[in-house]
Image (tube, rainbow, N blue to C red):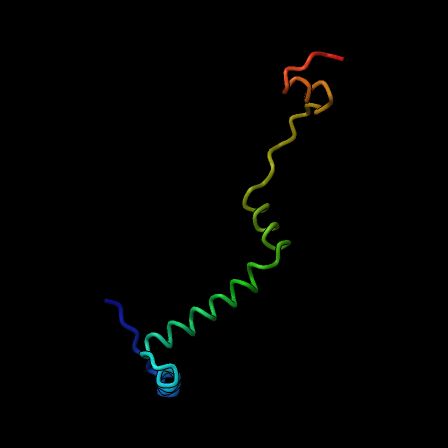
Length: 84
């Protein structure tokens, strides 16, 4: 079983006061506060689509160009279509 010992008396008192107001344990109060903070951080850092895309592109770079041309004949060959 994991344990968390809060050495700062002001923080412990704050956790105790919040727990009393909520009618829960100090552990539940701390868990709720940390979960809410995590959600806020995730929303702030995970919400910007441009930053997420930049990070993804950096982790997954494009391959080298092949020099092949993707023209109508190429796409027709994908569908086994005859030349027009």
